[in-house]
Amino acid sequence: MPEIKTDGGTVSIDAPPSTCPICHHASSPIFLDATANSDIRGSNTQIDAAYKCPASSCRRLFIAIYRKKSINGGTTTTFYLQTLLPKNYKPTIHEEQISENFPNFIKIYTQSEIAESENLDEIAGVGYRKALEFLIKDYCIHKNPEKEETIKKTQLGNVIENFVEDANIKICAKRATWLGNDATHYIKKWEDRDINDLKVLIKLSCGWINNNLLTEKYLNEMQ
Ligand SMILES: [Zn+2]
Image 1 (tube, rainbow, N blue to C red):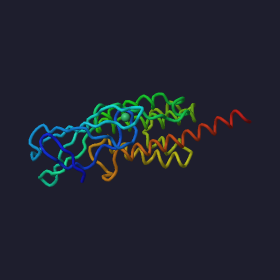
Image 2 (spheres, rainbow, N blue to C red; image 1 turned 30 degrees about the vertical axis):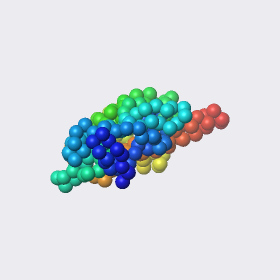
Image 3 (spheres, rainbow, N blue to C red; image 1 turned 90 degrees about the vertical axis):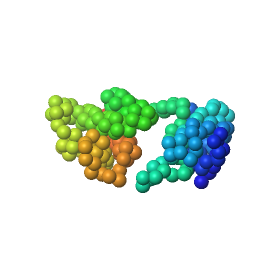
Image 4 (cartoon, rainbow, N blue to C red; image 1 turned 90 degrees about the horizontal axis):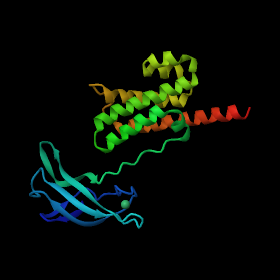
């Protein structure tokens, strides 16, 4: 375990920050100073550690906040990295076909990312589930414009089953829906999966949908 010096004594931390929260470059930031807000032996003590970003294009200062973890009724002696400040949210760049065709999805996904960056993980999970629904339904409406009203009213799982033809999109969207429902419902079915798995499946779905729409575009343009 690495150690840092604070004004209240030396403490062990799980790891120094691996990225700069301002420029988002992965780096080994330069440790400057740290302060403990109460006795370092206390269970609720917080360490604020100041670092400098070594990237020549950035060189900004930021703060890493460390706290102990509670395990089996006690607390660890090691301090764990909780968050980096200032928060500088970095939006995902989506594929061109996705941004062009699915503005509702982009809007909801972006709001979910902002919620996640503020540690509002419960809200973010529900948001990602909603974003997925708009992505899949708007994609199916794009493919079957005459079925728009039916698709809008149908449950997402049934839309995927009945209107998604591409096997890869179907596989990813179905699994994303399972995890998305976990984020919305009281009882969780997929205990070992979390919001990151949901995001990976949404990302995969976007990739397959983008490929599908690009192929469709070239087919139409080059008959
Ligand atoms: Zn930086």
